[in-house]
Image 1 (cartoon, rainbow, N blue to C red):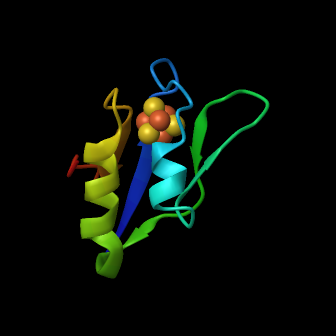
Image 2: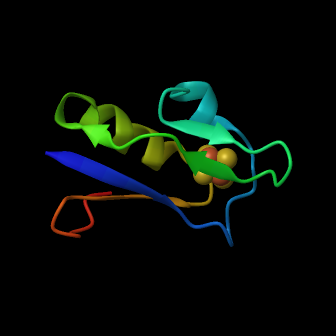
Image 3: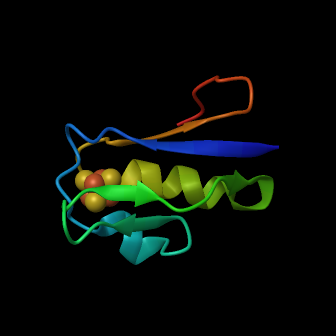
Length: 72
Ligand code: SF4
């Protein structure tokens, strides 16, 4: 299964914690100072994706499974 990452752009502060910890999944736009997801999360990386979501200081990162159920 793959999991979709979404960023709550209205609350992301562009701190870069997500990109530093998982540059394969997140990139902070230099222009907008907002994180953007780069890929979907594979099963093998789900723990990592959930860990980074928990590390976001403002709770801007969410993960959804293929049925749209929020997992983080
Ligand atoms: S860790 Fe959260 S607030 Fe910081 S850039 Fe990533 S999504 Fe935005």
